[in-house]
Length: 357
Image (cartoon, rainbow, N blue to C red):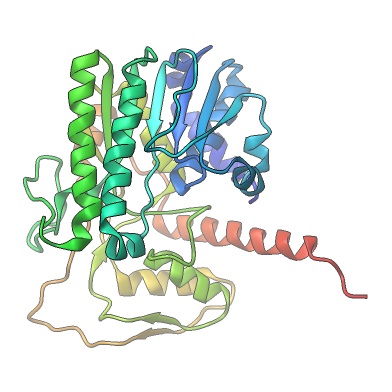
């Protein structure tokens, strides 16, 4: 994988510059380093570390150090990075003290959630408990949990944006609720451990995102749309295109997560995402127009005018009011940057292939 765009890294640093003093000379432990969140957090941390001469170190939990190094050699080889082998549920605690922990390890696979909900639930809950047991012994001051908007369950169609005090929840009898229920338990555990052991437990309830490192072959609709459009194929919507989503660019995601870690009060949860709702159909058209050669959009079903569209859109008033956070990258710009980065990945692959003859 290529590095993140320098413009994005500078953008993140510009808006977080005053926060990093809390990490000067300190050590941070991070789980989920090879994922979408982890790549953005690690690269933005290392960028700040180098530019501000923080002298910080980050220990990254990984199940496969060789795979990590293949995916992100520029991260794995950085002098401030140490890879720590282990499964998030049972890893051996690294020695020494750590001032900060970011727990971002979760397999957000819709396939795993549907086919093996027990494994999904156990990975989230047992993994969080193991991280918290480590936090209780390593002198940590602040711990950030990357939670999810899935903890709210199904969004009522008459609520335009979900606030943090919404009292809904996933259906406990539905197998696909394992992910959302697991995150709910993880939040509860963080709050309890933080109070018991005296560290700040911060919760980021994350919604939907777009940006470099977003998978193009999983259950993320916007990623699938990009895959097809970049290949010159029509974008196919299997439903009626009416569900409403919102998308935050990953540079904003990194700014928000670092701000929550360094500034938020303990035991407080914040929605992280965009509050600008866009339908799946409009998302598809936006992607189709963002590629060099626009493609067609095909919709399988006709909308039912009597049916209110499903929604998955957060309220971000709490983050705005309490932490001064805002969205800085418009959706159209986010799409263009993501597509450009993925085109660069394909170009890099082509230049490394052996030539015939």
